[in-house]
Image (tube, rainbow, N blue to C red; front, side, top):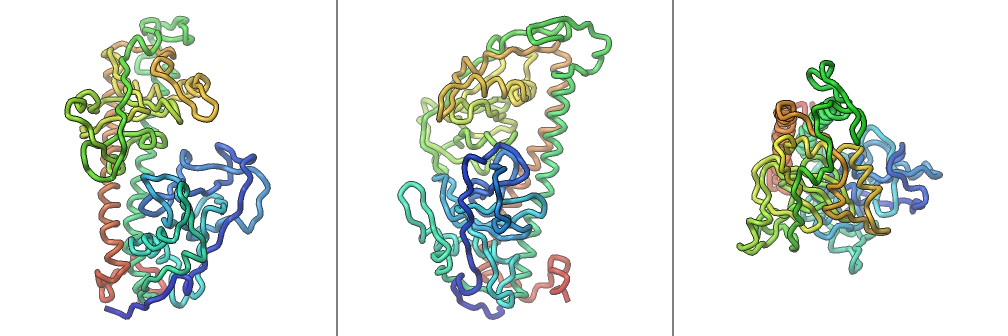
Length: 429
């Protein structure tokens, strides 16, 4: 194995605080993404999907705009059961991202000793993450500081081997990114199909159908309009503590479904459930769950068989009518009209909530059974392909995470391995 050198992080990199941006300028959308610890994944890397981001439209000092390719590190823990303190990521090539005070920006002190592309993998390695976390202080919100991160001791290989390690691990991330774009496309296809058929009423044969006035406006005359509660049953979930230890079934919570249209079950924790209560709260394929507290109205659907139960902050909504299949129900609940209604109907000033009766009060119009079946088949095809990609990404990420500590510590020696195109052009010779 080539020579690895013991060093402190402060000898090779410099970490700097960001700016305390004013909350009065925070927005739900905009051109400037205010990066926060919530944008970091627990295992490392950034999630800058719209549902995870805060935006800012106040005055901006250009010194706190993060350049594409910049490395950043989370210096605060905000989620107890998914700790992100010490996680590192790289700013995407597109978009405008702001550097706030809870995030550390990493700069290279000596390019001859450490490569920028290698830094996030080094910071995300278990040995470095453990040391960074050990530097944190605070009882409820734990926080570290740039100077303490600089005191962490590690070892680094020669630059050429750093490039090889970064090349291997980045290849996994690139495959995940490609799959995520395909997932977004499949989400859009299913969503567009729903809106075309059940919002615009441009379903197969629509031009030969008579329309009439209903409580929700003009709709096909042979469709039935009524309150959602007339077509479904509801149930509140189970109260338990979540754990990463597999002590029982998976434990679906609001945070597992409130940002995406799908559930990555590899990220869902476990819980203990008494045997006599397991059947009552067990989730079945086709179940739809809606968040009732903190972020009411957010929707999750169980699309594959899974050993799981659902938490008390969720309401399980099951169809009691053959015309309302799981996909139609889930897409109806995700649609803007329903989401706007829940937002306006939720109670509470600091912590919003909505009861099962409130969540099932809006009007819905149901199609004939043959059209409902057509939609379920088409939507199921899109969503099945989507969930296959989600499972594939979980497997790719698992493999990457197994390799990461072995590569970054030198336990897996690749010094004599020819990686060809995985290396930057200037180091490929």
